[in-house]
Length: 139
Image (cartoon, rainbow, N blue to C red; front, side, top):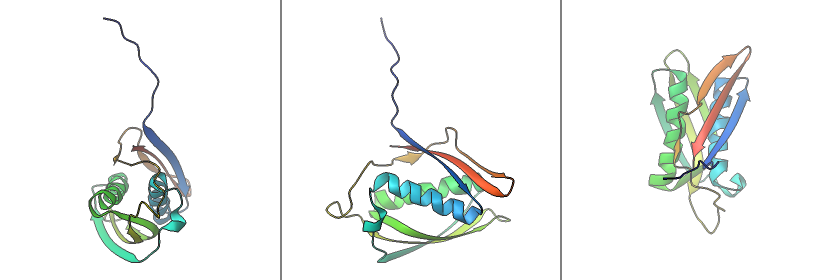
């Protein structure tokens, strides 16, 4: 049997650096949405969804939050373009208000379908006076 490995990637990766944890979570949400939709300005803010999440640590909280966005897109066909996020670092919890609308393929130019967040190289850490993250989306 003969085989060879071929370089191929079906993922999208991005890095984030923000001063606050709230800002980092918002940036991660926007990057995830923008991976799926070409122009976030086409997403009107006619629907509001409030979510609360708790995790064992902040890294897991970010992972679960982004997974929730993918779930809302897949299960409820909801896309979001505005995020108001508050992180409680003492309790590893989040409250968020997401604003957006139902997916409309005639209005929203779809790019790729994000299937999941991957744990591969996933990180969230405080570096000096800012927060940094590296995220890979499985598409």
